[in-house]
Image (cartoon, rainbow, N blue to C red; front, side, top):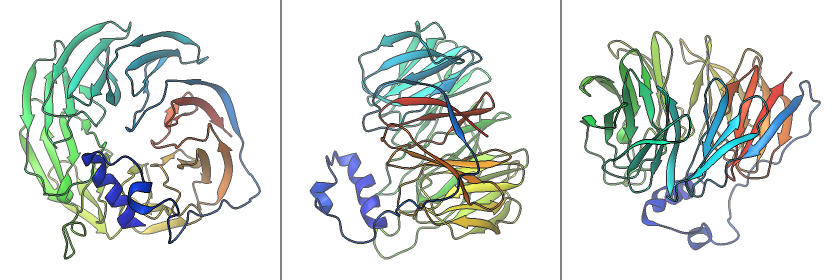
Length: 379
């Protein structure tokens, strides 16, 4: 199953159209876990829901401001919803194939296209500027300290002026012959850009000029074939004030000091979904769909839940009580934070939940692949 998933991710670069073309209409081998019944100890309440339109073949996510929720469809329709009610305030059809978005900050909304276009809008929906980078934009653009940081499909990271989109710097590195198509972006904190790369590399870059501060190997390629040796970081790093952590597909998870990049700990756990860090724990869904909590200081396992295996789960979100995670059949699963047992479940619109829920107004915001957007509370 892992090799099938990897082949599909790789072949997406070559325009492979369907799963059936490569694995047949009746795939053999392990099947996704069937959902188990349980006694619900929490309740999910829908506050409102709306739609941003289908994401197409890319992973798109919403952006939050003080009073609004912004989202974009794969066909370029940018929509603003009222944060409290979900009512549509306006939408703008940009008539382009959007591959990344929405980023927000400094009074801007940012989306990226499959042609490498970066478009910056004001919160009123008016286009402020447009700039084209080296290849398709797959990661959500980030804004900090007057700099828009954009990652492209060829592994480059560009720094653009937030005021007008003019290029400030470009970070480039060589990539292996085979890489996994990834929607990973970057994380910016205290003037530093953190990013994971193909080959298991994690880097820290200076925000003002794009210079390298430090680099570490989260995972080393292993295996006899190029396919087996893929060990890419395909999700965003996570960090707090003292440590930054990343996880590689077909590789490892590792944490480092944020300042100098000194290693803290590492373990043989692999995932292409991503991590969530809290004040005590790291949460993840590994490559087989096992949801787990790790002690963030040592990496030791706190708990595991293997009842969502092979359901193509999303990255998790966690608060003081619950861990929330979606799957490819449109279910939202709520697990107890202390031991990982199921607490609640909700089926949304039936399309995949591919991105981690966002914290919003003492609840969460969840987006589906078909563009459904849900404001939910859990108690």
